[in-house]
Length: 282
Image 1 (cartoon, rainbow, N blue to C red):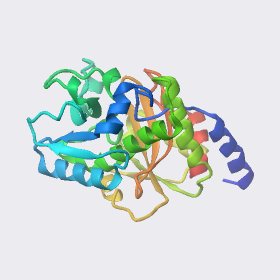
Image 2: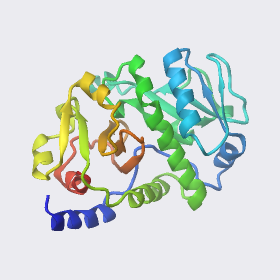
Image 3: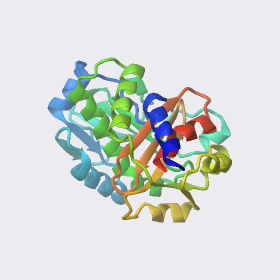
Image 4: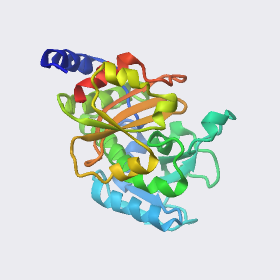
């Protein structure tokens, strides 16, 4: 892609599509958020030793906002804390949707936690779907992506504190996305590591080629191996089609979200105008 075209697309990137892939519901003046800052979070272990170890390692390395603790499986977190746990999203009774990985990592005030009950997502301080990394992700593969979710949570919630974001829901999430996108604007010459599964429903290769996106297609095993890269210029696509459609570019090595946006319910195929916005990174 020539330099003038890249400069034009960078300007487009700065002014387009603001929203984000992890969703936050409470601003800096809300009691639930203040309680999070004061009393920290508590990870409710799953009983899966590999998953639990990866989560505690991710928290130890990437969770900087507050103190954190853990409780063993089947134990309740202290009521004053904010619980971090895996839950199952509500089934849609649509085969294509319900065959996907159904797990969601959420942050919810511990006093509201009810074992076995559906979590109202508007009561959470943040949530993120595992199926956005790989739709048919198996339960024993989820641990590979814990570090990315924890960094996303920490980044968004830290921005709420530092920039005193208060407006709830869509506007606040737009503000967080704008801050993230502005921070990483101008990063060029990267490679998109794309799992082939996304080509089934979400990605048309003709748009990648049309916009001169540098990319590599990987089958599932190859895609998981690519997560072990030492290349700072390799990104993957987080693309979650659930209640809303959520997209992010994630630096595989550092785990940082580089760009993020959100669409309304029913958006599936990534259209050419979106690839025009993403193209400058590649």
